[in-house]
Amino acid sequence: MNSAKIAEKLSLWIEERVAAAGSKGVVLGLSGGVDSSVVAVLCQRAFPRKMLGVIMPCYSHNQDIEHARMLSDQFSIPTKTVVLDSTYDTLLKALPDEKASPEASRLAKANLKARLRMLTLYYFANRLDYLVVGSGNRDELALGYFTKYGDGGVDIQPLGSLLKGQVKELAQFLGIPRPIIDKPPSAGLWEGQTDEGELGFSYEELDRYLASGEASAALKAKFKAIIAAAEHKRQPPPVADLEL
Image (cartoon, rainbow, N blue to C red; front, side, top):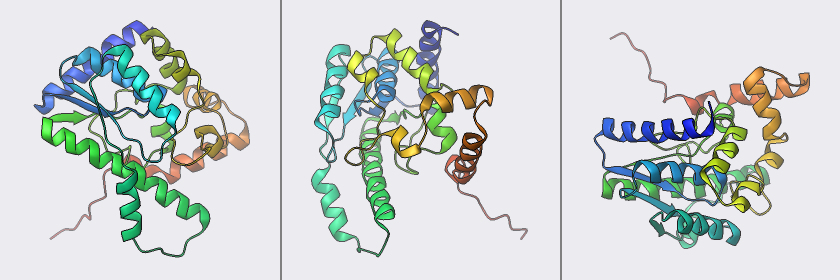
């Protein structure tokens, strides 16, 4: 399916999901990355007058904020900016400083940022009677490469069937600014963080594996282990089955 057909079908799908929920429009986070940019333009096509993009810097890179604003200006996307720095600091001060490894501590703090953004989006969603739209692609959803009840806490995932490479092709078709498409994918949760650096493999390698099952033996084992470990992220909370 070519990018024009994908864009048409996804925009219509967003409209249908909002109508089925009895909602009025959509709200999403604008991170300055290619995935959220693609979702924003698809939403703008579906709901040109009833959508909101929220820019939520939390000790974020200036470039990410600039790219989010670049996109909103180019496509006339209405936005709100909510700076979460002080909220994040206040919450960290209120939380006990439990002993943890540096890696575990960094991850806990990073996930806190993602969950603060989820809270912010649902505040707007509740006020406006909108659905929260996520930007997770097939690669991220397969690996569980998202924060549970953070960027994974959304109502719909339009890009969930698209590989990362397909998202970039769609971005080019939609006219997403080239600097957004070309920069290394990153959640921007800590200084120097990139998706591929954190994962230890490229999206191209993961795309190939998810599309065809092809990968080296070592990579196959790694992919399967990560996917299995993240199974709980892709499922609703289990409910105890008691025969009473």
